[in-house]
Length: 130
Image (cartoon, rainbow, N blue to C red; front, side, top):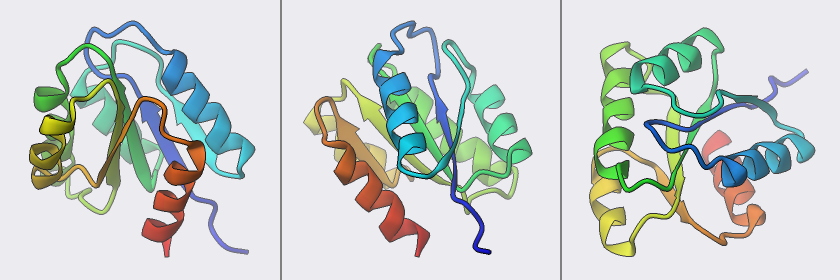
């Protein structure tokens, strides 16, 4: 039997709005993925520790507070420091288009802005899983 894809959905920083993260977590679970949701107000260190402990394939970050340019790359950096750079990081939320290229340069595999159809997220995961 093939290993089920495991995805950690996390809310880094002080952002307390989790409706989008919960929607993504539920939609991914409904599409057959094993999903772990960390809840709100997680530190980058906690997210990385959980990702490693849970042996996930992906970390999906959700942020609305505007701290994505600091927090998303920090998580990628911490994963590298823990020799866990094989975990694919993607992000979503209220992220200005102008910030997306720099985030990708810093190791975020993909950014999904508000309103992205769940099919696009699933297609991304399927393409990266193969």
